Length: 106
Length: 388
Image 1 (cartoon, rainbow over the protein chains, first blue to last red):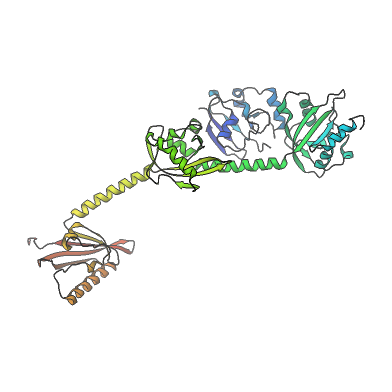
Image 2: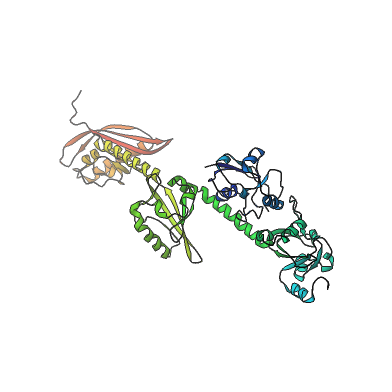
């Protein structure tokens, strides 16, 4: 199972195994990781699963669709590496992925 | 205003409990209803003609352009989920509100928008508080040292913490939704649902399981694990959830067995020694006697707890005063040993058959630090020992 490291804004690291086919957001929710809310349940409609994906992983995470880019307008402290975790599907190529959480989701 | 909306529409808008704005396509406020003036604390005249960004604002760190979004939503009548978003409102006093905002375009040539806003600040805070509490409690349960397994009223697993994962060898997602049977040895399965049903009816909210026998779980490896288990039930809207807390007692069982075996070995040596051995507490009361001591005293003597000098050492002695003297002398000897002195002496005992035994007798203090915690009394019958 691919291993994903979630780093909270305060630096706390959570290393968990996320099943192939589920989203990076779901992996955080299932493992009770603070800092990712996922209010809309993964519909790309709430911008509360905002994460930063380091450039070295960006390519393997796929390009965000227009809707995701638009919804990121509602997120806080958006940067070029910002993504919505619900739109990143975990596959074998994401084993070792590191994502960082922003200071706030609301 | 008359050119904006008909009188009856305005009456209708003002009667709405929900705050509503009419916006021009450029984002200027053309009208706000009574509920909106109450929500925002503004007079109608203060806001009419003003940009909507005065009352719906981006928070710091957000890049949202409110007007662009409102117009974009309004133009997407089918994209329902986009038209229900939570935005930040600002009242006249500068207070921020969380507003659930919907927008629709009126079917008119001037392309006006209706924006309705519901204050969800308290609701959202409450929701957040519940989520935080849930997160905290869940994380506590997740790392608890007990395996915790929740089942619903149909005995489907609904929660499986980390300790349960390591105890049973399953990952939570493999067993969530599965029947609890999977974690039970075959022979318990039939009866177990009856136990749960009985507990559901029981007036006790929680209980130690296995009062009528041992509890065991079945790991993925097929290994049976002896467990200590307690169960509690919570009814939500009449439907019970059972939470079972399990503790692996394999280590304890192994330690218990090892202790018993060691105890047995010690007992064997103790009881097969040629010497009569007794263990006394510092007050001289008997804690343990071996078989050789019992043989010396005569079978059937209930010695444990008795003062050492009160044991029937002189069965044939009829003179009470003489017996008391000897008892006192022995008591003094024991007390000297309790004070730390090691004692060895030769003594004679006359048994019930009036046979005299010569005894090589010793008392040794057992110390923990400076304190005497016990006394070991030893006696060896050397009557028949040939002189060297």
